Each structure stands twice: as structure tokens, then as C-alpha cells.
Figure 1 (tube, rainbow, N blue to C red):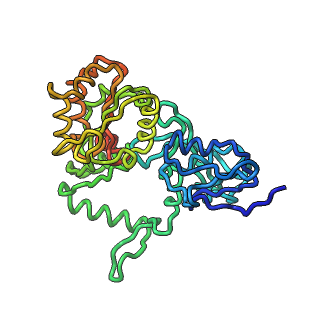
Figure 2 (cartoon, rainbow, N blue to C red):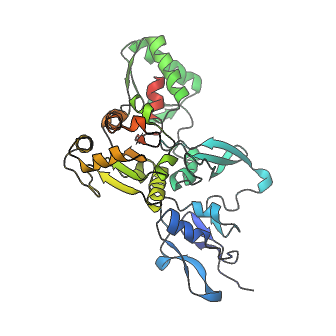
Figure 3 (cartoon, rainbow, N blue to C red):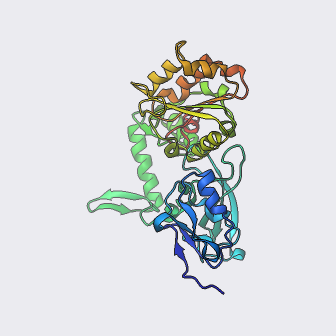
Length: 354
């Protein structure tokens, strides 16, 4: 019988019970072959083999939490969920992650009405069964101490809590006084239903039609939409923009890595540089791409499995990307697609509902 110290803090969010580990290497294979962060390893040899990180550094990677679900024996556990509930005390609620525009399928584990854990729920065309750490570990914000739980009104001593009736009466008074001189600021994280309800209240109730959207959106890209899994089967993927894909839509970054492993060529262009840097803005780089003198543009026109991805500000909410896709002949190629990655989780839905 071997006795180990437990639990070993692989990271602030993942704990390892080494006496449970059967050295199946699922976690290390995920680290090296899927996420490609190469942080989890099997060190030592023979009976002394054990799962660890290089130099015992914390396992910090955008998708580290997936190893918890991959582990078949419960050796890798979540520090957030560890010993917080028994199987017969919980309910599994299927839902969708709303923290980025991808919309990964997830299951929320609840106990007594409170979320205790988030797990992935496989959707082969959207997330491929994986989930980023932001979507997996951010649920404590639902019950954070600094989260607003009751209406607040600014008083002589700062913000003071008031009843819902008082707050609603005050809001109605201010809105009626302002009338049509109301500008609604939307964050892009609202649900489509909330945005529609707010638009109905402002427009029909007050005649106030002014709104500030977080970013522009365009329906022109609808003709080139496809499942995200299209990226995994592409032979040429061009990423345009100034922001890293993993920051805007982490799951898309995994699809890009899968495409690269399958032999696809991944090209990044735009102001942030990459394999083919181009001066000026990302929009300038895209215009150059569709020009007749662009060698990369010619390859996109010739390819039957090409994908364009816009990751950055500007672009008219996908309008420029749609123009490029049309110019490159994507409309006649079912296996070609174009994806615009918004900065907020529901920018398009909010704009359409408003």
C-alpha cells in the first residue's frame, strides 16, 4: 500500500489525490494533444511514476479544468466543488454558457437552489465537449459578496438600500420626467428577451428610440455561417484582427488547434502581426487579402475548405468579413465559412431584439 500526501494542489482550481491515480495518462494527453499547453507531465519511472507539472509550477492554462472531467477515477478534482455535495443532493440542469459569443453547452450542478459546479455538455458542432476555465470556474460570481442583491439609491451617506417598490416608483418618476430624452446603454451581455422587453418599454412607453450598442452588428454574414466544427475540418484558415482568438472565444482557439493538427494551415493577418503581418488596420489587411494581387487571396479562392475568422474591433460587426467572403467565392462552396467573433456574449441578439 502506498500512502501519499493529499491533496496535491496542481493549481488553485485543480487538486490531485495521487493514491487514486491509475496513470491512464488521459490528463497528460489532453495537455499535450488537445490544449497543447504541455504543462502536465508524468515524471519518474516505473512504480514511482506520478502526474505533476514541470518544476511543480501551477497548472495555469485556458482549458486546465477539462482534466477534472477526463479523469476516470476522481484523482483530479475541483477545489471549488470538492466535498460540497453528495450525488443524491444535487440536480443537473442543462444550460448554455453566456460568458463569450460561442455559447458552449454546459450542465449546472445545483444544490438547494445554488450553483455548485459547471461541467461541459458535449455539442460536437459547437464546443466538441471541451470547456474553457472561464466558463467552468466563474460561477461563484453569481453569489459574490459585491454582487447587487437589492436596489440602491444614492443618499447623503452614499448608496443606501431601499425596497423594490420604492426603487420602481423612483425609476418610473425619472423616466416619465425625461420622456423621449432617454438614451439606453446596452452592454451586449443581456439576454435577447431582456433586450426586447427593454426596447418595448423605452420605445412604446416613452417614445425613446436612442440606444448605445456595445458594437455594430451585421446580418450580411448570415449567408456564410456554419457550425464551428467547420474550422476543424478546414484546409486553410485565415484569422484577421488585433485580438487573440483565445481571449474572445476560447473554444474557437481549440478548433484552430484541431485544424492545425489535421494538417490545415493557419494564417494570421492584421495589425497584431502573425505569420503574415500587414501594416495598417485589420480592415486594411482584409482589403488587401481580397485584392487580385494577393497570393493568399488566390489560395482562398481555389480552396474548397477555407475559413475566415475576424477577431478584433471594427469590421462593421461582420459586414467587412461578409464582403470578403463574397469576393472570395465562399457563397458557392458549402465547406467554406466566415466567422465574426464579437467582444460581448450576445451583441447580435441584443441588436436584433432592440
